[in-house]
Image (cartoon, rainbow, N blue to C red; front, side, top):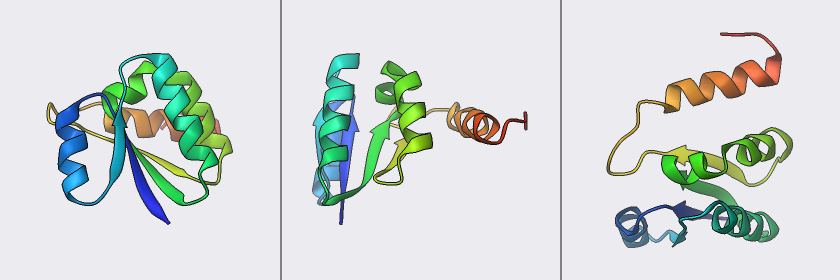
Length: 102
C-alpha cells in the first residue's frame, strides 16, 4: 500500500517526491476530482494526501467521499503557506458525521 499526493503547487509535490511519494499538481475542480477518482480506483493507494487549497477547490465532494469511503484515507495537509483552518475542517467533519456541533 502506498501514499499519493494531490497538490496545488509544485513545491509540495517535489518535497514529497524526495520522500518517495508520487503525486500530481492540479489547479481546477475538474482536475482535482479526476485525480482523486483515479486514486480511489487504484487498489495500491491506501492514503491520499491533499493540500488545503486542493481540498478547498472541491470541498463538498471531498467531504462526501471522506464520509462514505473506507479506502483510501483522504488526508488534508498544509502546504508551504500553512493553514489555520485544518482544525475547523476536522470539527466540521465530526459535527456532520455525528450530528452535533462541537
